[in-house]
Length: 125
Image 1: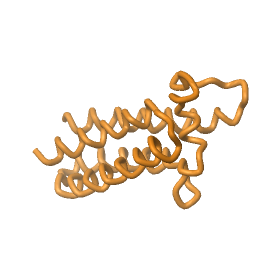
Image 2: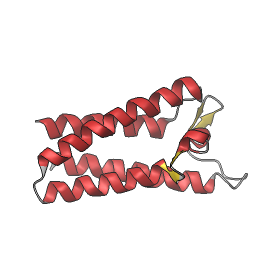
Image 3: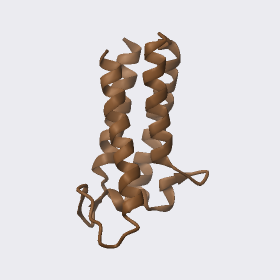
């Protein structure tokens, strides 16, 4: 059950990330996670690294966490484990881009990376 709670948190964070990404096109919108110039999720989401193959990374996150929840309920822990490894590797790459290329700290992104680590840990148990 812990995995479903963690995946649900990841899903909520991904939906919020997608919402912020869409709303940040409005110049009057200020996201809760936009704390200052160096701590801005909008800056990260709207960067050239915010999309992969032309699709928002948030959409991939939404689909990923929904898949994890489905896999949990159909008892496919080994598939969840391998997907969790993939998500952690993706988190390492996106974290590198965020901190060293964009030179920004995104609180929502960092929480998603933590969720992915927790998913890997609990899928491994």
